[in-house]
Image 1 (cartoon, one colour):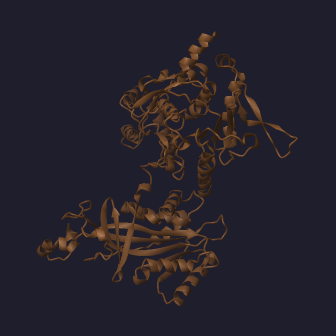
Image 2 (cartoon, one colour; image 1 turned 180 degrees about the vertical axis):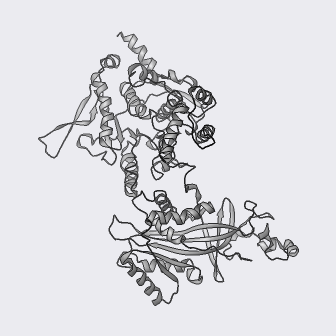
Image 3 (cartoon, rainbow, N blue to C red; image 1 turned 180 degrees about the horizontal axis):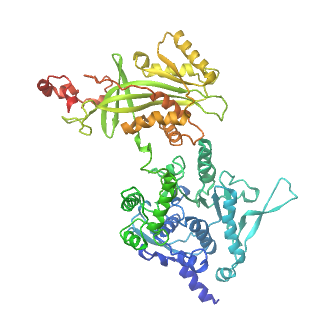
Length: 636
């Protein structure tokens, strides 16, 4: 191949200044199509254009530190995201190392970036010294590395075009210094690009042969699976490894990271990516939008509730009106409906939504949703022998009465890996809205009896002794503290409920004795485990009717972390490894009553900025005269 011809081809591959309407002509896609036709035989889709644009944005000179160069691609299965991110792009940058591609960089914030707001620049910093590809297991990451190495070893046409890259193995120094073995998971090119594969949890820095280097590009591919998300401990360890060991190993100036995967469980690093201040460039792409999927499923469902797959001709007609298909030429509407029907027939729609919709559950079939848990500050005070409560919900202050119950699930063992002892304070509150600066109440609910809110006020847990022992807190003291802090001892409707299993009856006796010795009288009793039902059934049969009926659960924002931990245990009930925190909440809500209507309630907890709130009776005194009721506002 002549020098000028080689230069023209390389220049052609470096031209990535293409608009979304001409994305097929991007240099990197032409590179993939021409040089790896056996792998990229399908047409690329707008989805792939967005993925590549996202990656190119990491090389924007305006992004000066690794914290500015973090990206996450949350995408459905069978989207070719692994082929593009773990093979096409690494090979592209290995062969074009030190060259200067022209790219079109989107300026908007990535989830829904504006295609009209862009810059065309040349990337003069387009090179990597040390690339790591991480996956769930070491063997899968090793496979990605071997794919790249085999190209360098066997493709003479690429060597003729770009020059010989000559992959060299890196020796692995074992404890047996005289026994050196070739390392399968790592190689280095002739121009000193190190490529290495690691499994999640493996050490990234510290190897003798790599100790002078920090990774400049970290690619994470499918680090989560159904298996490694079942355990709360494994989820915690994976997040800790990702945030502390992996990301922190990056070169602080040159470092870049790309995370790609699907939604397997809500308690993963994805929840961190989705925070508005996370600093991650984020692209989320389901196979089709939830709205269009719902419309198509309804359209193709007959009167008997059966989903009918449309004919090819009908499918073409339907698809012409769709706007959100991620890869229409590969995953048309018939394929999507077939997959949906297949999972539905097996009663596994949650899996469909995990695999294809970036949702961890079927929204239509979900028994309880994360957004039902509303976190806010909650104030309370004693009024007579009743407990008053106030909080802000949806921008409106609500005032009412509450009945508290304490639920405690004692740990069966003090061993580190066993469940924690968990103690919750739950309540049912009857509340009315207080709207500042107006002469009316909220018309959101036309119920003169007020609005009922389940409340999760307090949640704690850990390793407890029955009474305080050395540095270990005591169950007796903790329940006493909660009773005093939240005024439970002044309200005879409040109670303490403790789950009992076999030898745990002694715990109840010790707590009763402790309260008696302190001259504190409370309704304290044990709840025996019913062997006719599993613990998961007991929890779900108690909590789901409450959460579904009242729609929102008001939660003390002070305990958000533990309450979310309980939520994850709730949605995994029966399949997860722990249920201690949600079990204590189940006990807190079990058999709890709703307060009766009240005629008046004073705001004894008024703050200095609360003067704008008039009392209800004053505001509605004219109506009171008409209807002869001091609490006439209740009837609005």
